[in-house]
Image 1 (cartoon, protein in one colour):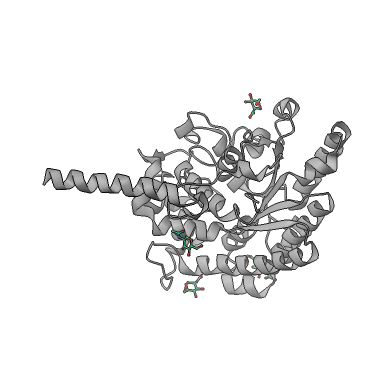
Image 2: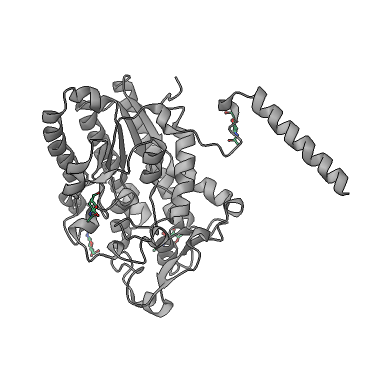
Length: 383
Ligand SMILES: *[C@@H]1O[C@H](CO)[C@@H](O)[C@H](O)[C@H]1NC(C)=O
Ligand SMILES: *[C@@H]1O[C@H](CO)[C@@H](O)[C@H](O)[C@H]1NC(C)=O
Ligand SMILES: *[C@@H]1O[C@H](CO)[C@@H](O)[C@H](O)[C@H]1NC(C)=O
Ligand SMILES: *[C@@H]1O[C@H](CO)[C@@H](O)[C@H](O)[C@H]1NC(C)=O
């Protein structure tokens, strides 16, 4: 038995060595080898977006908010303002590109120290649409959030100063990676104010959000961007907040992972419209690489492979409050993780979600790996 086992083992070793020799690296897609974005030669990363990619901006403006404090940052032993127990997708993308972690725009000292390898303008709670545009759809913001157009203004200001100091600004901009993620908050505010999916589809909110993203892309392309990564929305129906909100709806339906089907279908609806918009932009700008960041399918892949990846909880928050406190909370308004009565799970790496709306570091790392595999050939990095 032991000998047979050893023999089999040897065959496996020989076989795998053989495979390594005969297979060119790029055909090894079934393995876990994630290509390095370093090969893409991105000079810097500029990012616009929501909490999904906020590496500290909202926490710098408001040091008393939930994500500025423990247990946020638990896994990396530092509360950095990121809405997770550790790092975000953008951090793994920066690492893979062999760039420093992208500096938050609001950290002026870091901005001065940085060697122009990028800036992060993303801000938690930021919608794609302006307060006025949302008000037209009967959606109100409870405080002025740095919307997409506000973040574009920051980017403008930054480049004005930057281009005074950099010799060939156009060249530097054209070899930078621009990333953008928006949508989840616009829809989140709408849902929390009792607008339902059918109404949102009818009243044009989704097409307005997609149009705002397209206009932002036109603007950064006119400023010289040549490599752009545009994220769709993820499977928001899997977020603990969606599952909790839907629990009052007796006729709600769930997929086999416990995610709210209608919400996921709605995310897909946004993503399809967004991709149609990107197709138009590619036709208008054949010299620009406009790549879609498919968070939806990245997350689907995590759920499909949750067992082998070691995830035990797919739709519950690792960091949450006691059930009794939660019952009294106003979802979307009251941030639960970090509030009085917070309970943190012992092993965040077994959870896809850290809090009621955001992924754990482990999930972010897996999502980033999937995205990197997917975008690598699209940016023609090994050309
Ligand atoms: C490997 O690549 C082929 C061709 O691109 C694709 O059909 C297949 O699904 C990939 N396999 C995995 C495991 O990604
Ligand atoms: C700002 O950046 C500096 C330098 O990287 C860092 O030491 C500091 O902790 C940051 N401050 C905040 C509030 O994030
Ligand atoms: C706007 O929302 C409020 C409260 O959610 C509702 O009472 C009102 O009928 C809505 N108005 C329109 C025009 O949809
Ligand atoms: C409840 O779920 C059903 C089925 O998915 C859906 O059609 C309906 O709009 C939901 N009701 C509310 C109030 O969200």
